Amino acid sequence: MLNIEFKKLSTDELDKFVELIRVFEDVFEMKEFRMPNQNYLQTLLSRDDFFVFVAILEGKVIAGLTAYLLRQYYSERPLVYIFDLAVETKWQRKGIGKSLIELINRYCKNEGMEEVFVQADLVDDYALDFYRSTGGLPEDVVHFTYPLS
Image (cartoon, rainbow, N blue to C red; front, side, top):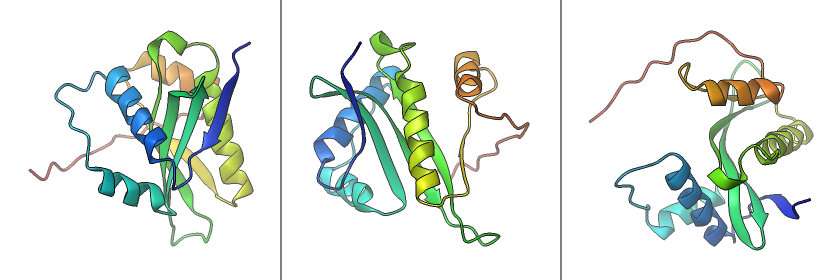
């Protein structure tokens, strides 16, 4: 059994946040990615409406997720949106992603959040199957974007 530590990063763990961004860069095959400056990332990590959960094996981040808290006006209980979730390729299909989903759901329930949600592209069968396997309930929606550049 792998001895993986799962945790929510605190504001003083910028190095682990950067490691997770490198995991995203690799898994999502982000060409020409440039890391934002450390001050910006530290500010983001320090926010109370931004969460980073990671899986650490032998001191190295091998997986994680980022999420944003969305305050509502229909309810005093906020929603949480999982923005990114990735597991290094060689560690995929070993329950690490599922453990991250369980961790954020448990954290959000304990903090009184109303719901956690995530989006996945319809063409990404792996992601769709993964989120279904973790108890996610799919909704038929169309996501619109407004590019501003």
